Image (cartoon, rainbow, N blue to C red; front, side):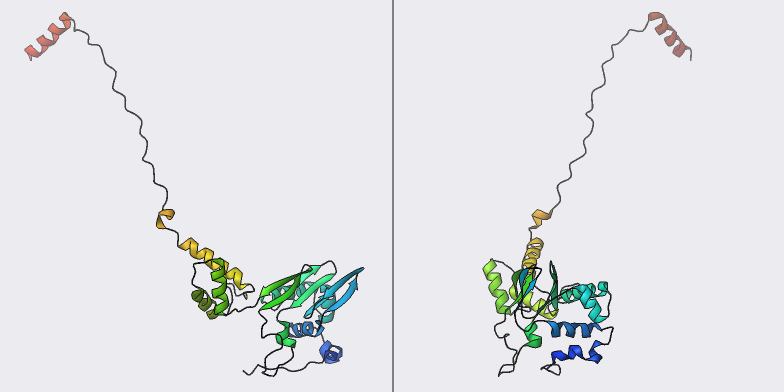
Amino acid sequence: MANDGYIKLYRQLLDNPLWKEKPFTKGQAWVDLLLKANYKDKTVEIKGKIITIKRGQLLRSADSLARDWGWSRGKVIRFLKELDDTANGTADGTPYGTLITIENYETFQGSRTPNGTADGTANGTRTIILKNNKEIERDRVPPTLAQVSKYVEEMGYKMDPAKFFDYYEETEWTKKNGQKIRDWKASVRTWERREKEFARPESDQRPAPIEPPKYKKLEPDPEVDAVEMPEELRKKINGAFASG
């Protein structure tokens, strides 16, 4: 590939007047983080407490980055969020500053092995990040089909792992909103849950039967007592018909 391979960037580049020209572009800010990130674990004392900042991490405030890059504080915060959304890095607030972790740091800064691969990636199925001062292991993205199949089997799921794998290979492991998938196991769990929802028996989805309308109960008309017609009135009526 044309963009494969490495070049060496000397950290003294940070002191070069050409590099310091502001404002920075987003690409320049990204490289600036790579240059400032620890190349090995480092222990520092901040506010009387010993803090370990790991390889591929840096502890900075948004205000200091804003000064370095010639940006507003709000633009720095939006940029760090963009790194998180695109799976290039994480930024977590701590009592000592913002801890920035470069995802897949070895891909950018690792040494080369004899077979031309980045050192540390041969079995690098997990990325270790520090979130809220706790180490968290995150499974590598993208996974292999074998990894997906194994996880599906371990969880006892009924889903087709190959179908899941092929779908996300096609989307280059991005969500519908365009964000990169950072936890493929969570996506597997979501896929399984949705398949179960769509596979519910039709009897479980039918609406409740509609009750027939209720009519008022009909009551019989009350009986009327018969009254005999007076004789005089009866004669008048008979006479009227007879004369007609």
